[in-house]
Image 1 (cartoon, rainbow over the protein chains, first blue to last red):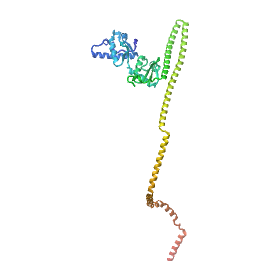
Image 2 (cartoon, rainbow over the protein chains, first blue to last red):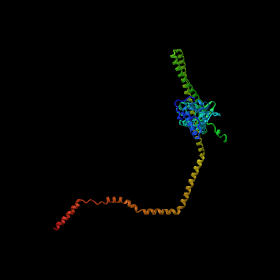
Image 3 (cartoon, each protein chain N blue to C red):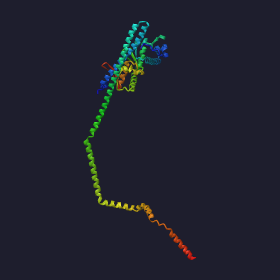
Image 4 (tube, each protein chain N blue to C red):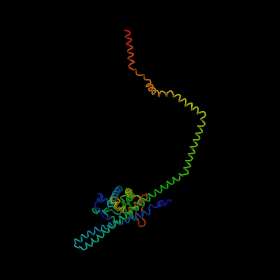
Length: 179
Length: 213
């Protein structure tokens, strides 16, 4: 996740020093947070990654713009992430809220994307491995191609709650059956 | 139907066959990953061999190529195995579909049997018998009723019938008339007068004139 995708274009705010300081005025701050929200989601969507460790975030090109010598402090990042969590676009993985998962699609949206794909292929009623759902040759053009397994399983659990699939994790079997 | 355990309550819909299919698919995934690994190694070896050749280390390059060739053979073999796995997977899935079809047929059969049980043969016979009895009874009643009427009403019926026939009699000849006319015409055609008769008549007149003159 540390590798910076070359093509990602940061918005103008990213080169604007005050953008990296939490603004005191509440209205301005809300605006600032909302831009950061969008930026974080865009960036992770572009990089196709989901995980972020706040402790390493100061080295992250997203939160550290060396060209203007500004970086976001951890508190600010936490504030932005908490705001994302409010809309289910992020979730802390550990209790210390250090490691986070960023969902540029919410888990529910991921679930629907996957379920649509499965029904379009007529694969309901059959079992699929987690590997072929995210790495298989058939999913190369799908948005969830390369999705991290942890996130995939969480999205599938949402579907499972709706009775649309059943996740299989027993006897070193890892797969999912769709209905 | 506990509320607390409601979520976990419904039985798993994953069958043993599903697990077997999954096992096969997982095996396939592993083979694919293995292939990827070998393919990457092959590309790397090729580059390395090239480099060794430029450095003049022909023997080492050859060794490397030999290793590469062996790995290529492995790759081909895994392709065959992959095919086997895929076929097995499809066979299993198809067998499951077949089981579903059989189950569907079985259910249909049972339903048909139940419906047939409702229609017992004796019942059908009994119902038909009862219907026939009903019909016979109805006929008897009809006979009785019409029989009771005959004494007086039969005469009235006859009378009415005659009445109708009489009233409609004059009409009958009208329809037949033209036919008779044509027949009588033919029969009553006057004989064609012969010429001698005319001459006689003429001569008679002349005679009369002559007499008068």
